[in-house]
Amino acid sequence: MLFYDVDMFGEGPKPEPLTDEQYQQRCETYDKLLTDYKARVAKAFGPRQVRRLEKEAAQFIDRNAMLDLSFHDWSALLNDILRICCEAFIEAKVKYTPKKYQHEWTATELDRLIDICGIEENGRYYIFRDAGLPCKKPERPVNPRAEAAAV
Image: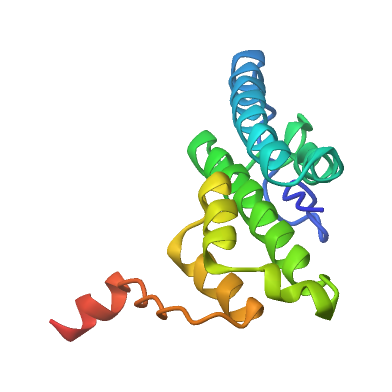
């Protein structure tokens, strides 16, 4: 699990506990994001993956988890985890389809699932690669440190 509040050696400062307002804000954001992704996963895959998605996101609702993250970082991390779970569901569906049925994974069918789940271009490339379909490799994201060093 991704708990950042554990200090293994007792050397670091203890993070401040969340106030009731901060925790309520995180709960509302958690509910909003999870409801959105649950609807997407239910439409694309079904109820089994919805339950798996809920299990993956359950660690984010714990009041003592990730106290050292700001609200913005916490919500971005939750959104990324939910999106990556959706991507993993598609990849698993492609990977574990029996050989005699793999011809059914067409680009349009995969694009439909990708659009439902809201997966970005990098994730699309890896899904298509796993399915054995041609796909243009996405450009690398710009590294601001490399640009600053080049100037």
